[in-house]
Image (cartoon, rainbow, N blue to C red; front, side, top):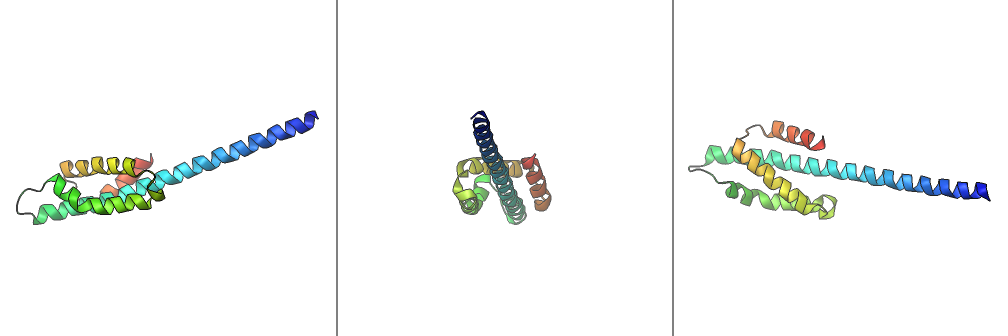
Length: 121
């Protein structure tokens, strides 16, 4: 009877460990997807700001670019994990856009790579 009880405890512990492992892996995959999505959107944002700055006859505003990019971002957020982290991603996207606008980055690929690597660390 004692061996049976130990065996049951071992099985329960093993199952709990397996579930925890799967949850951790799912969380890491979700973080990777969120970072990649924001990185891709950062590429678009840097490119859009660069284009707007080079073609604008008057000073551009942050809200102008947000208005152009927001539909794309919202659609991307819905596609990532069914929109589960949509608000969090939207807030991060707004901070990213502000950073890009204020610092006038001009290398979309470089910014996106840096953003994704920083996000993952």
